Length: 584
Image (cartoon, rainbow, N blue to C red):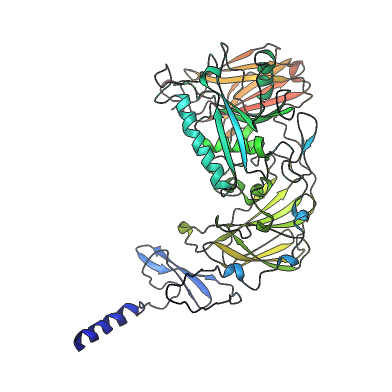
């Protein structure tokens, strides 16, 4: 190489390693790219767009953390190197010997429910119910297709009303998605196998479906009647759960979707109790399958408010528990680490427990390949836990590194009354949160996890509240009023028909109001004395382009007296102004 070439090469090397030139980083100064962050003067600034310009925002104060340990090593040519996560080996981390015994944080469920055989089961605590597969590596499920006169289960897309695909095709498509969801959520610790009953053994009936699509009406009694009268020899043996599935409905058929899990007493089962799932018109939604299996296989609680479900409302999916757990909202395949703990998918070394320690530091990770801690539990009292876990950073919010999620598990609150409540805010490096007698400081973070300091303050210390009353939407076990089936359908010209298979009532009332304004009444029967079964109510005067809520009240005595049972429904959706039928 000539001398001139050496000089050129040297100049090129210098230009390659020279850093870019920046103007001073301060609020209002120009910056080059939206979303870029920089730290100066103890503040973290983010480049934002202001009008047509890119400028640095006001910045957020950064809490100084003690320096993390550094390591150095001499690497020989050809030597394999292992990159260690420095946060996980930070010397500030409290050793296991400084933690509370994990059994203390395996809180007892203070509101257990009664199984079909009369024994108590702990849905939101320990010990896990005897029927569950918690801690096991696999489960076996049988799917039984059911065909009814008004709700067939199609096996050929050329069948009348089948649409572009058959119910069997949809079932065969959803099963792999359910299997993969369990594999991913469990970090490859759990495998579910799903077997479909051969077509020659499908349950085919020359009657209408006995399963109600009204929320809160249990399907188990209708199935028990079928088993007692028509399927006495059906065996549940060899399966952890049996799922009974109908088709998704014919073209133009609306308001048929309902999914439930339940338990039956059966001599033809391995334990005397049969775990069952009902998928009525919900074949193609894998997360709903996973949700119901969460009940039938693992005994998990519902984390959404029953009051919302009864009124036809959806929980807010953008924040809180519904954002992070499919037992609160079945839109996405997410589970809180607490539920994974209940399911047996976290090893003891992946859960840290504290109770009376004044100050501790913990490394938490969300890396699926790591065996490091995933969940920090704080025992507030018997049956009540404060939990912390890691969620990934978000490019949309220009936050680097992992963030901290905090939530409470209060087993004094029953399923359906929000026993698990997550905070809407996630906390990043340098941020802190005080709640229920504890302060959590996020000391440091990276893409795989974070360091969090937990300090016991006793400020606003947790006080055990009185248990919330049981949800009133479900029919009480001792109720005289029994609902077996309900249907609400648009009949055109701004009319509808409500049909109820109901007994034990002597009077009723039905009214229709705007979904967003209960004072706007479109239809009202007043209180009418009747014990008719089935009860058919013709509804008229419905609005178009506006969602309505239909409320039906049943009374055990005449003139609206005695016990009352209320059902809310929004299945009519929004009617078109053209012909009064439901919009697609």
